[in-house]
Image 1 (cartoon, helix red, strand yellow):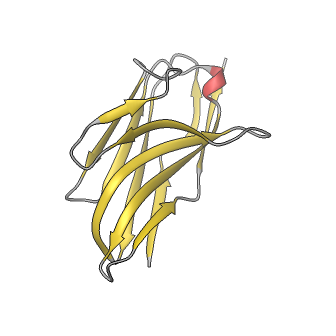
Image 2 (spheres, one colour):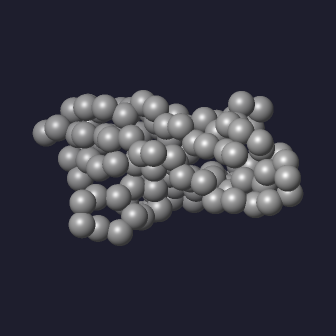
Image 3 (cartoon, helix red, strand yellow):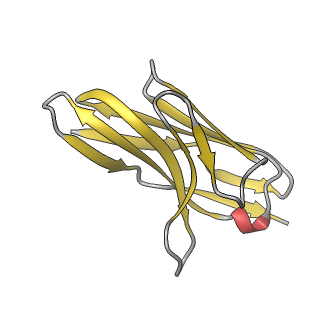
Length: 120
């Protein structure tokens, strides 16, 4: 089995910064794209940022210029650095990864979510 575990959420003031981390573990042969999503109550889960295994990144328009996604392939980790946080960034953030397992099967895995609360 494989799993993703997020960390780094919490309370921050508007204009502040925060870094979320996500670590993948288990029977991993290769991790393809990794990304961060967020979901506010009553809304659909939306993509925040995604990064390929080669390091190419893409962002939602709402976070471009403020968030930076990165990954450490040696450690099976993905990060998102959030700057200039806004109150509307308050929600639960989920880590996602496409993983090729050692048994040859590909799976899409989600983390359990971590709450980021931005106060005004």
